[in-house]
Length: 186
Image (cartoon, one colour):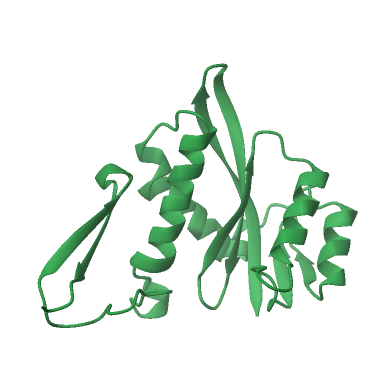
């Protein structure tokens, strides 16, 4: 399996003023499943190396079945980060500079989270940002259809797809994200 990883930034309003947070995520290309690996206001090589260890965990790691990981030329991908991936059997594919089109799935996910979620709210602190990102990831992975997958859900809940029963609306983030489904017929 092939996955892609990237960062995006979000401005967060804190008691100290605006602070820029970096969000590191991985997307599995074939399934489009996304996992946010970490959020930090001051990322460094040690932080990213620990995230690599978490992602490559043999039991619950997101990259445990991935053979190749596509990344850009960010200097945060230090030698220890690369070593952790190599030890876990994941080959790192570094893209040439200034070539975002070569990491199109990751770039499209950034556009989705920013346009559908983060551009419509002002995160008030790190906890608020983490909640908004986590809610969007659940929405993206379980409730949102994907054109590249023939308008299917990535990881549907049990009972999704039934044609009987009333339609219910579920909301996340105070109605910012909505999901419609049929409830089980009584």
